[in-house]
Amino acid sequence: MIRSRQLRYSYPGGPTLDFPDVDVAQGTVLLLSGPSGCGKSTWLALAAALVAPTAGELVVADQALGALKNIAADAWRARSIGFLPQKLHLSAALTVQQNLALGFWASGQPEDAARIADALQALGVQELAQRTPAQLSGGQAQRVALARAVLLQPRVILADEPTASLDDEAAADAVGLLLATARTHGATLVIATHDARVAALIPATFDGQIGFQPLRLVRKQL
Ligand code: ADP
Ligand code: MG
Image (cartoon, rainbow, N blue to C red; front, top):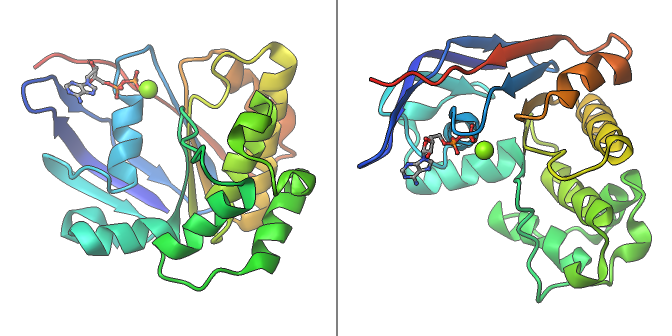
């Protein structure tokens, strides 16, 4: 579940962004659309407790984020949020297997090789476990990053521009994979995108099990 009220974020020396209220039921999809610069990535950073709101309320996965501080925020994020960033941030010096193991370390849990293998297998990339990120295609790297994001069964999956620079077929694959993965885990899925194709792909690729709530962010100068 995600709930926000009068959420605002002011960049020090930058713009003030006011976000529309949202109520997103667990297991449904929220599409954050709108042009570049309207605040989509900022909203994701707020939802992941990477930055604190300047004002307003935000509850994500039953946690009121205003009450979370530093270390508690890190532990909560590692447990509750699966983040698929626009730049995937796979560690170049580590293998795919080790990149996933980082998720266990970040959440203070012992590494579980069987769960890593399962997560890779669910996304069809188990044979890539010993490769490094430089040895992956773009699509393979995105699958690995998604496997990493859902490794710890997060309640919420946040995807930032998952179709950026993909052709139509690859974009449909990426969105389909996100929806299927979210459904498998019963997770709430948030897709932030300026790509108009995504809104059309969501109803086309899910079978009605997942509710779909579009939210258009409009940039407003204060
Ligand atoms: P989107 O993801 O929709 O393209 P962002 O959330 O990245 O939008 O950015 C929203 C606005 O905040 C933009 O005007 C952007 O220039 C500004 N912004 C983003 N990051 C910073 C920052 N670190 N410092 C100052 N302004 C920023
Ligand atoms: Mg962005």
